[in-house]
Length: 186
Length: 265
Image (cartoon, rainbow over all chains, first blue to last red; front, side, top):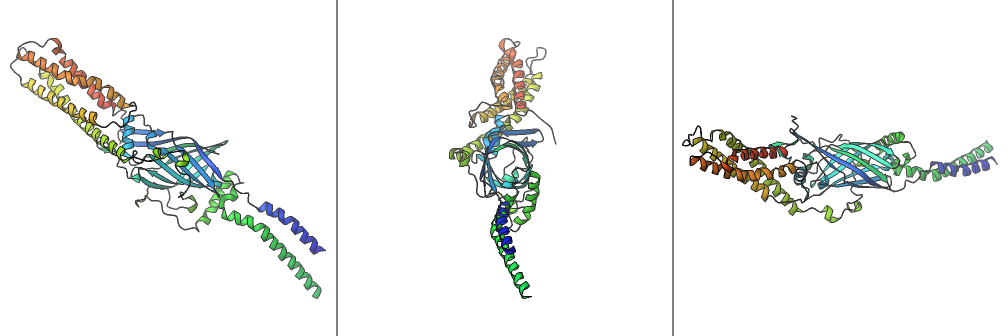
């Protein structure tokens, strides 16, 4: 009798245990870049220049707990406030031949709400690809909007770009890119 | 002993049966949690998620080593914050495509011909810039030598200073023409209106270009008047004024494309 009651107890409680122990399936998710501001900074002994683009496009696709993101921006959309300089920038970065800058990265879906995002970036630019590991972005979540900020530590030499010169003095190698984006889950 | 032994056997069967049920019912959840890695943290708050993510990373180390961050060419990246990488954070080889972003092949495909055109434009504008800076020398020299160009106290026979001024002025005009020709012949790659300093650089052309034509004409007229023993008069007397305006606007045009200057060494 005791055996039967114990067996019955186990049979009744095990499904409950199973339900509690089971992991909820993580749904596939799509992310869209709503607003963006990408700003490169160029330094020269005589000039400090910032060029900004608000025309980046981005999408993220989450599947099986992993999210693959792509951000793309046309080189010609960067505006430094001087059309001649912008054209020269496009020429120097081979922007007519390689018009799109592509940034790819992967994040665990579970970490998407984290206040900091540690990203390994694959950047295609000027016909070359560079990888930046552990680039930290700050995230603030306001409702459905995920506001991401950070700096990509890009350099001219990463993409085998001949540094432009002014009065025979080349620009500095570092061209950090400030990132300010707002993403939404669709 | 016989009875207690059979009772123990019975309990053992119940326990084994129960454990089997536990395994059968509970295992899929655990297996799912292991295979999906960090999915287990979705119900936690962000701070806990961070801990869970960090805790989950050592599991990923069992995977094959991710390639070290480097350029495709093989040169190491100094900008990389760490050489330690995790397979789960590696940039994906698949994922959204440019087409998914709404970009058409026309947007994404580059043009080698257009790049060549831009290279040619930049090359010609670099020469324009270099020649323009060199031209400052004869322009400045012509302005300085103009001090000795007018006849002193009615001495119209001494022409040395005047000749030097004419030579320097002619050199300045010739070099200016060469400088301008590179800017004029540089291929036009954009039809958008100019923005920034180059806009003023272009506006100033309307002053120094006519000035560079007028100045030598007025100078020749003044020279002829002086050579014939006359005092400079009429429109020729505007030679110096036009020359100064031309030189000033030329200098301003150079500054316009160099401004703002922030000296920082």
